Image (tube, rainbow over all chains, first blue to last red; front, side, top):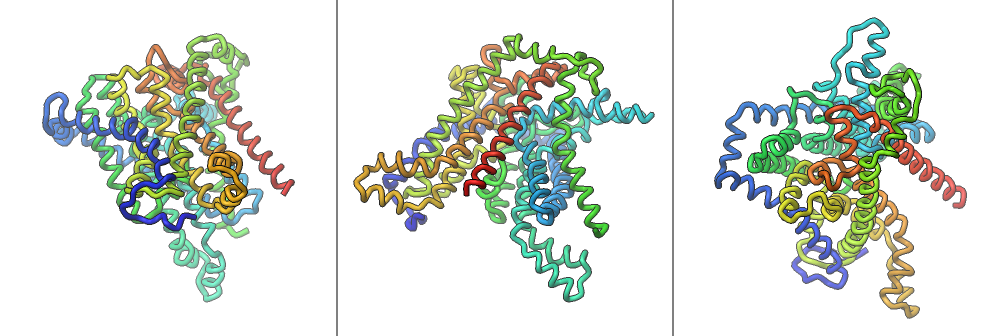
Length: 283
Length: 261
């Protein structure tokens, strides 16, 4: 442990210089392009705030922003509803079943995003597995692809591990004897659970909520393949503006808006949860 | 069992199926003879696998992806390990800013990174080049190396190094023969993260790809985006096989280590 690792203006020592190559690399490959995006959003096609005005004046584009928040919010909600009981069961299960439940979370985590999205296309399309089964049972085919249902099904599966892992990590640290104590004092089990146990898991739930919501805002692949024209998210709009009509300045402005929203949410969240630990827990 | 407990197990079982099952639906479908990939397949065949191994666009993109991922792994190991050593052991100004910068590539949406890098690389002639891909993927992969290696360094007992130096080893020998072997497991972990991050990266790669250079995920992307190319099912199944064998390998390795201990 380095006791001298404290803040303060100090010149780098021998070890400190080792940080430099990575810092230089990221400034050139990562930060500089982002600054160029900001510059371009203010200068292309003409200097000024025209691109931002175009965005905030158009109901069509504002709808995309609203839709992005709605989808991210729904994904977060469903993910928590599924992930919380799942993580709780992991704390109760025997080591074997805990391993099985953990593996079920980790397999998709390590599976290529495209493989998973492709699988959903095969399952959800009109001639897909789900509709074959419905048809065989005599029902009408249900549209599950190129709409909100498809996006939610696909995105929740991607985000579930990012909710289960931090929630489980927090739950593991909660002393279950508190529940016995509450019940011993006369609380009914449900009351004891929601009033004593659940509040203690809040740090994990907060981390999961934040991680899922913020990541969902910037999704591109899943909504592009599973979503429809009615629920375009901002990430898709950026690509459309670029590849379709080459509106570089406008696409850059969209990127800046998404970046600012993401950044503000993360800064707010950094006061509540430890971002480094969150990233360490997820991929 | 209490009813609540039964409900909990039922919900968790359904969630687990939802997480795992869809992935494996691809495998039987990849053996379908039909271009429509119906489920369950009416006729079985290996034609989509044959298609993969005989089609140069698929093979070239696979080789490109592997080459890029290997270079990304090496570059992020060097940059990331050096930075982790500096961040854990060193003194330098603006610590918070530096940690923020190192973690930022994970937090910024990849669409934004793709757009930003595409604009700059177009001017530099780096789009559709392996170097361009390696640079971007390294920026995205390096935080994982820094995280895994710095957590190993924080629990590292530096008295071991002092002992080696006290016995006359120079700093380089000490690093190579004491420090490096002890942090090797986390280097391996970081390497896996870096490799997978690069090999699996779609979004930024879609921006950088073109006729001159296309990676496997981008090839798969175009095989799903407009019209479904059944070859994607064969590729997906093979990727799943690799993932699962890595998983099984890690599980066996852990068992063996536990037996020894």
